[in-house]
Length: 233
Ligand code: APR
Ligand code: ZN
Image 1 (cartoon, rainbow, N blue to C red):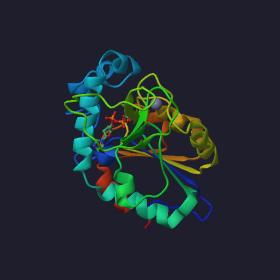
Image 2: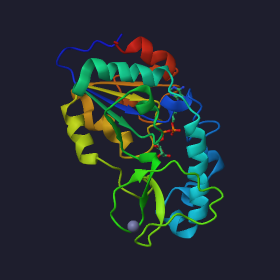
Image 3: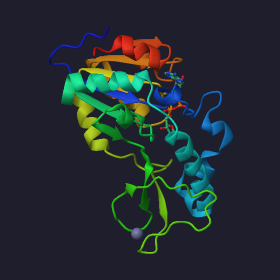
Image 4: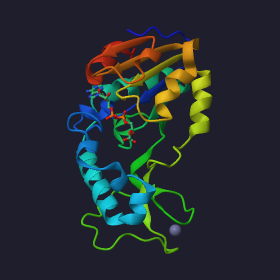
């Protein structure tokens, strides 16, 4: 069981591994998404300019998979931790699915955006809830301003969301935990180095991440099995 003092502040970073047991494919694993799709063809501003239909087919497929997924014990353990710690827990996810919210987590920071939101690629109307499947995209969705409606996702080459708030919480935390992330995509992969030796750093995941040496301890296994035993409820 993770010892958390009454003054400890936790920063938890989750990646695709936390949703794996809910049936949502990871990116770089055996059946990872990047085995079947090329990032530059479906998840970059260049891809959007070049072939928005293919981009919407990719995100419609991901919406279809995620909408039939249910939270697993890892998500539920993190919800219980939030209920216990309140604002002493900062939950930052790289995932764009809504399983943390479905499990009951209230304060979730989606640094890579959200699958069930879209936004305009031209004007600055705020992102809006959108579960539509544009697949096959007969006619692509357009904004009143004439711009194209795109997935509210941070693509490769774009700046992740809420970084200021994220780094403030990193500086305030006394325990840093990463769950189910291969530690290869920046800036999330460097969060553990950012907190450095100042705090206790724990990794929970199915295999050692690329940044394993930066963690005080690595607990290897399934998040849905480790987190319920590790986190106080
Ligand atoms: N429990 C815990 N960890 C698991 C499980 C599981 N059941 N199954 C797989 N994992 C681990 C894998 O060992 C791997 O280290 O989850 C990690 C998933 O790594 P990636 O597929 O690279 O996903 P992630 O690290 O979240 O990717 C980061 O890359 O493609 C971009 O924007 C996308 O947010 C994504 C970012
Ligand atoms: Zn617009």
